[in-house]
Amino acid sequence: YTRIERSVDRVAGAGITHAGFSVTMTLKLDQALRDRLYERLQRFEAISLALEGRRHAAIAFTLLDYSQPAGIGAGTGEAAFILTTRTAKLSSHGGQRAYPGGCVDPGENSQQAALRELEEEVGLQLGADSILGRLDDYPTRSGFVITPYVVWAGEGARLMANPDEVEQIHRIPLRELLRDDAPILTDTDASEYPVLKMPLGDEWFAAPSAAIAYQFREVALLGKSTRVAHFDEPSFAWK
Image (tube, rainbow, N blue to C red):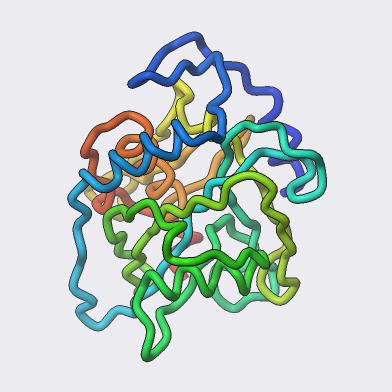
């Protein structure tokens, strides 16, 4: 998993402009970007799903400045998002790539759960005013309905992995989401819909995390209203 941060630095843009963003240029973490993302997310009509016996979970798709290694090197001013590698010892989804997040506890709402998990997993304490908006609920084969929130941490965020849950924290440049080869769709016999993956340097990560990243790209970066809940997950994510 340590290959993630090394490989993403090798990716160069293809010279294509999407909705005002040039892939050859880094996306700067500034007020203009925050305002644009906020406006698009507030305009987007996110879909909420009934639990129907599933557990409710929430994640924080968190935006901050890129540094390498994550949380240690000086910030570059380039916009990035947090992706973690979960510890292998976890009973659920151990070793997989994910966003800070977890189950919604009794007495709290999904927004509060996302912010609580962000602090518990990577040591980042933020208030409700850091939330720019939300994306569609995503139903997982492992029995969850995930509500994703887009959270603005801004520059200078210091991260510390909770060793009980997080093996490694990665700051992934937003430019990775605008690659020409994204998304990667793979047919599966398990569903009429393909498995969705997103490229990451010379690797990839898969739904649910990849589906959330792809919808963030479509809605917040490109100003579209793309839906992703129908895309499937690889079988290793079902447990």
